[in-house]
Length: 142
Image (tube, rainbow, N blue to C red; front, side, top):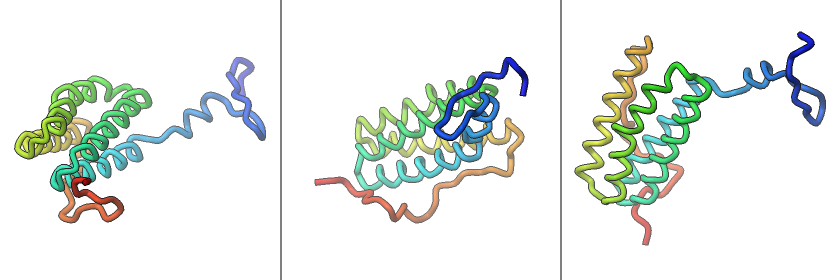
């Protein structure tokens, strides 16, 4: 290790900034979480649970903002995606509009798949699973 390597003190030792950077989640881990959130968002909206749908849209936004930090080469596309697709999806949730939501989700999914091609990952093509997630009640709450 070089003498000017920055160290972070841990309970049981020290780590360099490079070692800490290696521990950060990669694009695959972050995007797997994005896909899970998008799936839950879609089914929450279908069930009329607009608050839950909006929560998962915000989670997608947060995850993508983190991805822009750890993988800056995607930052421009992620910022544009947020403006052009995340914002309208959130607006549809706020309006409780099934039509606007469906249009926003289709547009966002199509754009995400285009970006996979752009970034040399054409084999990644996200589709909405046929079944709703089993771990949450997706229906509207009383």
